[in-house]
Amino acid sequence: QLQLVESGGGSVQAGRSLTLSCVVSHLEYEYRMAWFRQAPAKEREGVAAIDRDGATRYADSVKARFTISKDNAKVDNTEVTLLLQMDNLRPEDTAMYYCAAARAYRANPSLMIWDYNFWGQGTQVTVSA
Image (cartoon, rainbow, N blue to C red; front, side, top):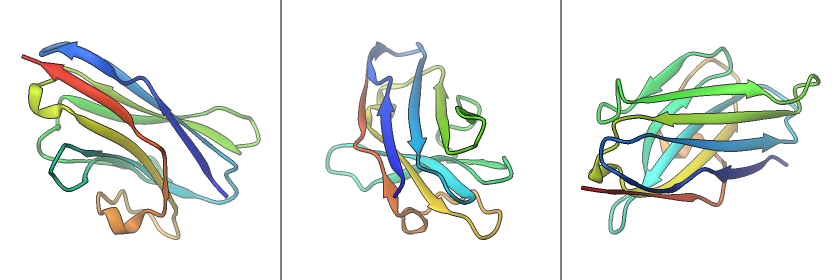
């Protein structure tokens, strides 16, 4: 059973940067991974995804500002750290951010919520004007 633990959220002013981290452990297969966010009274939306081969996909609202990446934390590939570098943050980026993962049978950096079945607990990002 995968375990996902996020960190790195906080409160910043518009135009500043934050980096979110998610340690994904107990990996056994190939996985796609992604970051989602959910603002109050809004649906959860995909922000950035990275598939098993490293291909990425971004929501239009964050393109050229956010960068998703992953680092193998262990030589045996049982743990990776998923990162989301967020630059030039805007007040509309304020949300709870979640990392997600799913076993990948083919390359597909999906931003669809139904393509993921493992979720972290979330980390809050607040951007003030």
